[in-house]
Image (cartoon, rainbow, N blue to C red; front, side, top):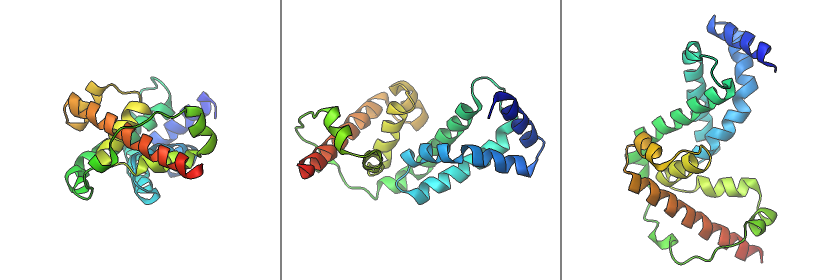
Length: 186
């Protein structure tokens, strides 16, 4: 879709055209599902997040000013929706998970070439999804969204130290899980 077609679609959505909303959803839902999936524990949760995000897109489409890409604007709404959901569910959800101290310890770095040649993308995403919500959220915001710890801390309502600690712990847990997969493969 070129920029003129995209502008026409946005204009139709702003005017309340239901078929335009449907076209917009079809155009961006697969890419946004991939974004949502990284922030969720499973596909059903990601689908719920996707729906919540698109409701916000439809409600706020009049606020899109044409600065930057439309896809980037939608992606930002999806990430902010994930952040909102995380903040709402934080206390309840974290109580379901035990300590990760048993997953931590001395770790030997492994070659990224070994990881990528023997593991699929789905396996790596699955490992990220198994992280606690706090670790998964910080990891995704830092690694995939490129946010700095100060911004993450502000958005999540935690200290910068907590953000850094959660990222470090998430990386250690992922490294341990990757090492286990690599060991099992050999």
